Image (cartoon, rainbow, N blue to C red; front, side, top):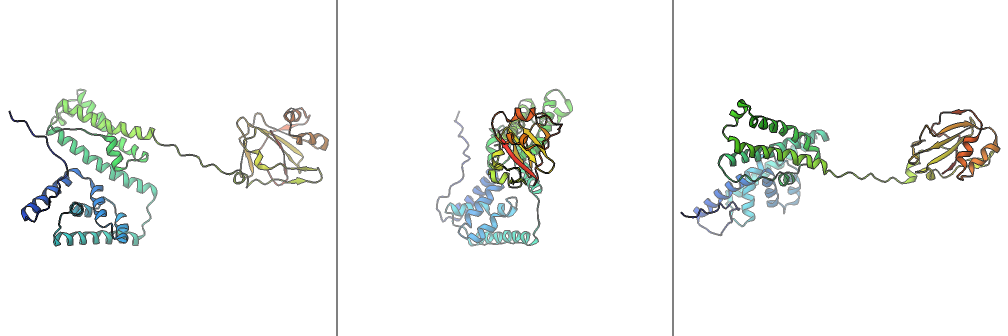
Length: 350
C-alpha cells in the first residue's frame, strides 16, 4: 500500500515565471490559502505593509477597523506583492481604489466627530473578538466532521487576537451555557443529543473540551491580571490641603511639620479657640486627607478640654510618656475628631 503524503499547509511561495497560467494558478492558490489561514487582522496587517512607505496614508489607514471588508478584498494581493509577485496593472489599480475608499471612510468618521465612550469601545471590541472566536469554532467543527486534525490552543488564539481581562466575562457568559448544554447532551438528554447527532459521542467530547478550554483560558487571564501599582504620592502633596495654626505666640507653642504626621502611630493637637486637645491613636499609621487626619482608631482616641498652659506644655515634649500623661489629665472626655482648622496647633507625634 502506497504511503500517504502528509498534507502541506504552508504558505504558497512565488517562483518567478512569466507564464500566465502559472501566475493565474498562483493567485488562486494563495488567495485560497489566505482565506483558510488568515483572520481579518492578517488582511489589515498586510495591507498596511504594502503602503508603509506613504507614512501619512499609512497613519490614516491604520486607524480603520480590521473588520472593514476592504482589507479582505486586497490584503492577499498586498502579500503577493511583498513576496515579489508581479501584480498586473488592473490589480494595482484595484488596490489603489480600495485604499482610497478606506481613507475616505476614515475621514468621514473623523469629520462626524462621534464621541464613543470607553464602555462602548469595549463592547465593540468584545463583539469583534467573539466573531473571531466563532470563526475558530466553525473551523473546529468542520475538522471534527471531516476527521481532520483538531488541535486547538486557546491561549495562543487569545494572545493573537488581543483578549484582555476586561473582555473575559462576556466570553465566559457566551461559552459557559454551551459547555452545560453539551454536558447535558452527553449526560443522556435525548433531545440535545439528537441536535449533536452529526458529531457522535466521541467527537462531541472533543467539542466539549474545546469549549471548556476557551472558558478556562478566560479565567486564567483574570487570575493572572497584573495588579496596578499604586502611585506613590509625595508627602508635601498629601498634606498641602491641611489648614492648621503654624504658631501661637501667647502660648509659645509652634506646630510641628505636618509631613511628620504621615505613618505615625499618634498625634496630639490643640485648638486654641475652644481650648480642646485631641489625642489621635492609630493601629497602622496616620495620614492626611484634605484638612482632616485619617487612619486613627476612634476607640483609642479621645478629646479633653485643657485651659491651663502648665498642663498643656508637657504634651509638646514628644517623649514616650506623652500618651500616658494625656490620659492622666483629669478633664471631661469627648469623641475625638480628625478635622483640623486654622485654630489648631499640631503639637507632637509618636
